[in-house]
Length: 237
Image 1 (cartoon, rainbow, N blue to C red):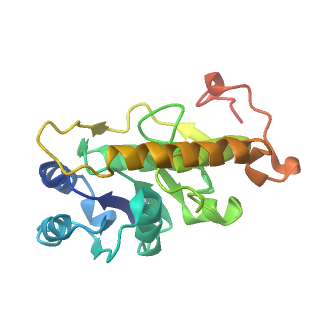
Image 2: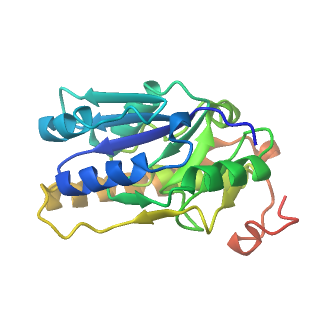
């Protein structure tokens, strides 16, 4: 397989021990020189210092950005995307750990499912691309959008998943080699509980409102899918 640079978008805030463990695990990636790592420390100087001080010479590119004001997850991911120089990219969590072969597994599967590089590959859950791989080509195909700007914290990956399915461009990898480790050590709350609840209600309302007309997609483009049972079947599209 001919490798190309793959972006890895990683917003972070407050989970310091997890971030260190995740970066160490990521650095053991086979073909790590093809990773374009972009870390956005969301209004958190400690996360910035941890990421900025990490020995990142194993990666092809390594960018750390400190936001001057609170971005919240959706804007932080979009900021990371804006700093990414790669066509194909992944979006991750700072509590992830990685099998050394995760990049080769994920990229091989993505290119198998989407030879034109236009699609969304979920790398953790079958029904939701909370962690995933896509491309700038898909964003162009998806009316210029990745995560919809209306969401603050929740539901951008739900809409992305739905739009990809409705466009016939969604698949799931059951063996990506990416794991989500729940941190047991004390961490600064990423978002206070009351604030999380408020944004969840607002973002959920926006998601359901947008879902009523298939998120504004042209009806002529919609793929008639049969449900998640067909995802990754040989004849799915």
